[in-house]
Image: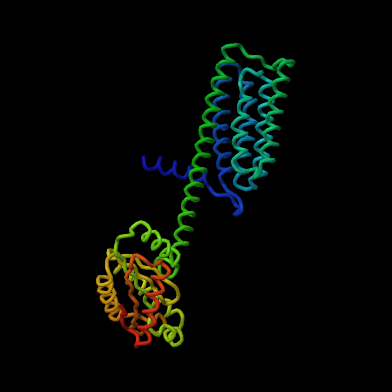
Length: 365
């Protein structure tokens, strides 16, 4: 059982093998491979049916097309998709014409044009004009076949019951190919939609977060504040702006890599600390902005606890591996239900600069 499973997996991997051109999608080639594999099986069964209902001549009619199907299958591993598709189209349209010429319209092979047309819409022609031209060409070819059979007599006319048997066989084959084509197309569309949703989500996330710390950025915090003030006009709110003390000195003496490490470590500390207390963002440069639900006394208490954690945080210089510490100065302001968000932020910022003037590593409330 394991051996059969292993062989089946290798077969699937072989069918799904990538093409040698990095600028092209393999999806069309994989679809053509499945089509031609079904056709190889088709011609094998066709040979058996002709032996049962007709004579050995049918085997010799099927063998060249089986070899051409294998040739087309091999082309999908070596040639460009556009070239493969043209070879695929020519071979199959020629087979359809000769089969109808031999056995007549009622065997139903003209319906193989529908999955061929469907495959053309996968990726071979990237614009509307190309798809339209190919569709018109397929329609013209089918119309030609119809008109041809109105005047020409089949070279090998079949008995009615044999004709019905071949028509049913062709119907099953066509629906098998159409099922795979539609399923493959739906999976491709689904994958594209999922990828688009993922990229949109990532772009949205990147637009709202600071790349270095992973915290909200200034824009996200402003949206949050304005929304919170509008929807919770009677709820207490306290904001705080914190600035890393002598951060320029860290960059100048230890390098910008170390400065980035300070911001990353503090960002992680803030995210953990604020998880159930409020929200935080990187306001810009070495400044961080905090929002606490509740009055100013509660917000001041939280900021003082955070300031102690910052002072106790050991940061490792990524170059020298030396351990060092930083401190921060904070300005805290309670929302008074009258001022604008901009005014609230300005007041907290004024207190931050007052704390710097008073010697840093402190909270001004």
